[in-house]
Image (cartoon, rainbow, N blue to C red; front, side):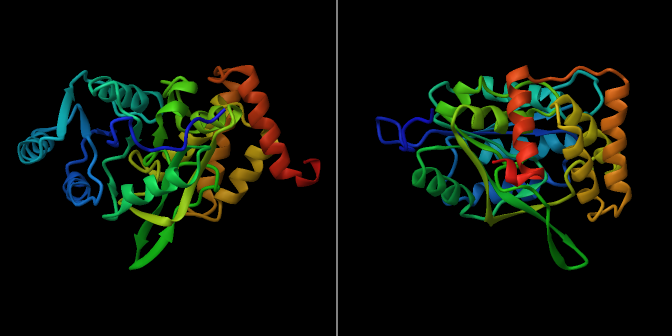
Length: 295
C-alpha cells in the first residue's frame, strides 16, 4: 500500500530528479530549457539524455550546463533509429542511473514540452494533499489555428511525457519497464498496489506536437495499437477506444490505424509484455468502464 504523505527527506530537503530523453529535437529544446530554468521549484538535478543527435543539440545543452550546475547531459550514439516505447524507457533509465540514489521524487519530461512556471510547485502540492498519490502529471494541450486543443486522456492515466513518481511507488512497481507500453503499465501496476494515479486537468502544459507524431500521426496511431496489444487490452475495449479516437485528428483514419495496429500485433503473434495478474486487473478495469453496472 501507499506510504507516507510527506514530500520531504528527513533533512527537510525535497530531492527531485528529472530525466529528459531527446533525439533530433533541437527545435524544441530551447523552449523546454527556458521553462525548466524558470520553475518556482527548481529540480535537484536534471539529466538530458541525447540520443544520436546533431551538434546543434549538443551546443544548446552545453550552454545550459555551463549556466546551471543542476543540469547535466549524457550523449548516446549507437546508430539506432528512433522508436517509441521500450527504447525511450531505456534512455530514461540510463539517465536516472547517473543521478544520486537518495531522490524522493522523479519526473520524466519530454523535450517537446513547455511547462508553466509553477508546474512542479503544483505537482508537489498535489502529492502533499494525498498520501496515496503515487504517480501524477499535468495535462497536455496543443495550439491549432490559434486555439487551445486538449489532448484527450482518462483522469487516472498520467501522461508518458510528463510523469512524476513518488519514490515509494516507483520502488514498489520496480521502476520503468523497458518495454512497449511502459507508460501505461506503470499506472496499472501502481493501482494494483493501492496507489492513486491521476493527471491534473487544470495544470496545462503546452505540447509542441501531438503525442506519437514524431514519425507521422498515422504511424503513431498504428504504434499505439500495437502497444495496446502488448499491454493485454480487452478486445471490445480496444474497439471502443479506436472508435473514440476517430473524433481526433487525423479524423477517422487515426482510430482506424490504431485498430489495425492492434490487430496486426495479434495476428503477428507478438508477445504481451505484462504479467498475467496485471493483465487480469487491467481487463477488469476496462470491462467496468464498458459495463459500469458490473461494479
